[in-house]
Image (cartoon, rainbow, N blue to C red):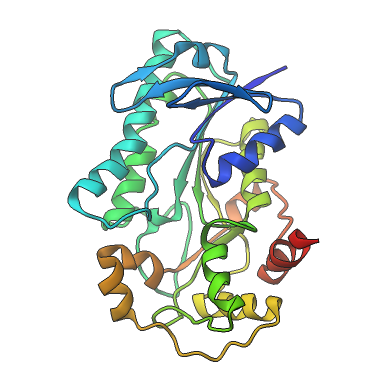
Length: 305
């Protein structure tokens, strides 16, 4: 039985990915700040700030799926918070690289999350591909450094895959839950202009892409983890209202209100361009949910039944 070590396993993707890997016959272990053993998963400890890691986790791993990182939207982007967001991603990767080197461990693959924030907070008609450069804003810089931090692992001859994750839709958490809440009360509204794109992906598909990256030895390098259908903020909000059979007539939430509330972080909600899924599709990944209406029906209606 092959072992997959997951970091950041308590996050949105990790919680869904763990049982999916187990159902495919993998042994899954986690790295966290506290040791435990439950649900058939043994958790080993690490402390990125202190540079501490239990080497037993790395010694047992055939694969590492690296999802760890401070939540980019959890609090306002102060100078200190920006440093924390970046260092939580880069320092954790460096710590894993050091442990691999120290234990002379040759993984079958190292798969790391990144984010579509690589392309920056910009609303345009451009359809970004993996060949486009990183934006120079905070999100672009964060993702660029995040991806660069795994170079030491690639240099060990380990197959490395980086997934630029889009806006993950799940039934009860994350962006969809936040957007659906006001819609359920009949007060759903688009944000700002509503014209900004929201490159989304169903939780089953982003887990499927990580599993393909793990199992398909031909995959290496960078892939966008987004669904094929592009939708704007207004289109997505209207689709949520239509799925829930709720009205959608309230005016857009003005940009200045979001800027006052969230500061610079409001860029995450007010800007966005299309992101291409062509590369991962050409690599052979078949999406379960290509259309946002199908994804919403599954998450908002089927999940209740």
